[in-house]
Image 1 (cartoon, rainbow, N blue to C red):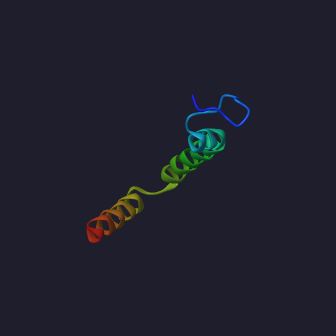
Image 2 (spheres, rainbow, N blue to C red; image 1 turned 135 degrees about the vertical axis):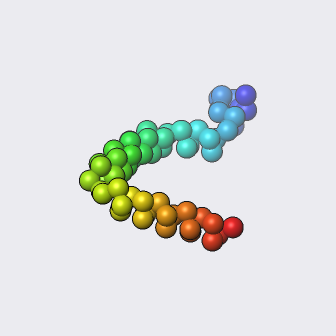
Image 3 (cartoon, rainbow, N blue to C red; image 1 turned 90 degrees about the horizontal axis):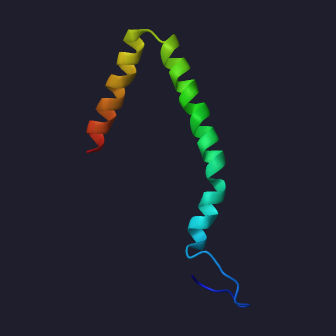
Length: 64
């Protein structure tokens, strides 16, 4: 374990510890986004969902 100037214990990965502090907010945003996506998909007609999926597939293949 790395030690600081005064001999205190410090985390081995300071940057990793910083990202762990922000994770709760990211997970909350991800949960809300997933819920919104499901609600949006439920309101769409099957034809519209198919059209969106087709465009996404074309875009993915075009990039390669």
